[in-house]
Image (cartoon, rainbow, N blue to C red):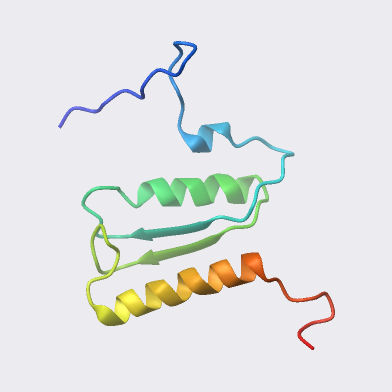
Length: 104
C-alpha cells in the first residue's frame, strides 16, 4: 500500500502532522488519546507518539489503549461500556471541574 502525501494548504506548502506543531512553552488543553492495539486502520503508534510528545513537553494528557477490539476499539458490549464510561468521565471532568476545596 502506497503512502499518501499530506494535502497542500492554501499557501501551497505541505501540511504537517499535528504532533509536529506542538512546541515547548505553550499550554495545550488536556487531550484524551484513545486507541486500540488491534486497530487495522489507524496504527496505535500514532497515539503513542502523540502521548510521548506531550509527556516530553510536560503537558498533561489522558491515554487509554484497548488491547482487544479493532478500529471501533471495542470487541464486545463490556468494552464498549468501558469506552463510553472513559469518554463521559473525561468530558465531565473537563466541563465541570471540582472546586478547589473539593466537592461540597
